[in-house]
Length: 363
Image 1 (cartoon, rainbow, N blue to C red):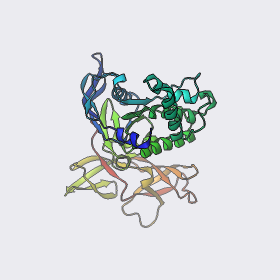
Image 2: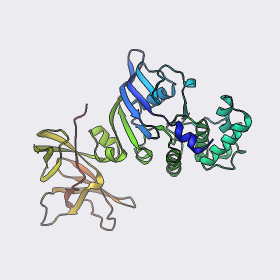
Image 3: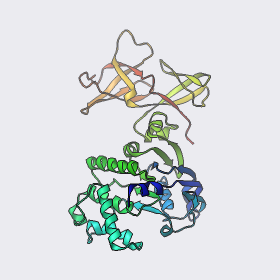
Image 4: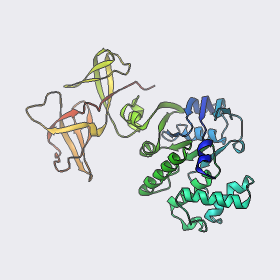
């Protein structure tokens, strides 16, 4: 097995109006259409019960679609069982055999598919080298850390040379420091080998860190698709703004719209923002905590909201402020840890010129 073989086997994944129902009352996935390019890492992100894991399992062939078509590499696999799809899956629980060595675990799928022992061992050793576990083949899973066990599971999937590699909440059993390290490992392997990866998580930071694109799901449907930066900086709805990181959802008024630019008022603040197809009237504005500036009151408080600090919390690399402005209570952060504004202080609140974004109404 070599790197070029893995690169050429990467395939696209496409859903065409796919629905999955359980009985007559439960719709787990509702008319979903999506496209994952060959060599791309796409994350399915959303809260529990949104349909992301069911979508992943339909790619794997572990669940069958009720309606619609599923294509892998342009081939219709909608009715094919898991055994006839060129897909490998890394499970949340790792699913390693405790009585087998690491090398035997990685060889298992190869031997089950009919590969001879010599080729299987060579491929398994190559796979362990890819994930940074060269020389660990003789150990048992119980002799490895959680992060190392996860790498073994990845190696076992990689050596099968799948067209598509699937990850189902792969880091949920690891502590915070290990999660960061293993997600970097997964991303590095995916990019080096140009693998097609579909990755499921409910952790927005994890999704932002590993993805080329993110598909945000809500109530069995797709809420928004975009790059990590697009979703963070240009969320389409209140749900996406609040789910992808923290956001202040603020009541605003669109005064007028000219050439796609909206004049927006929030109390005393006037903003010029992309109208995003919205018209005059009441609106919602999303502003990230680090895009709100809290300043002591001065003689120059034009284009600012008057507020009062309700709470100031030092958390090491920043100070978190809870500020009451009358109509809205804002959560703000500041990296100026040497200049903490104490609770009870009257302040002026300003918005970063590139921070606020208008939101579409929830569907």
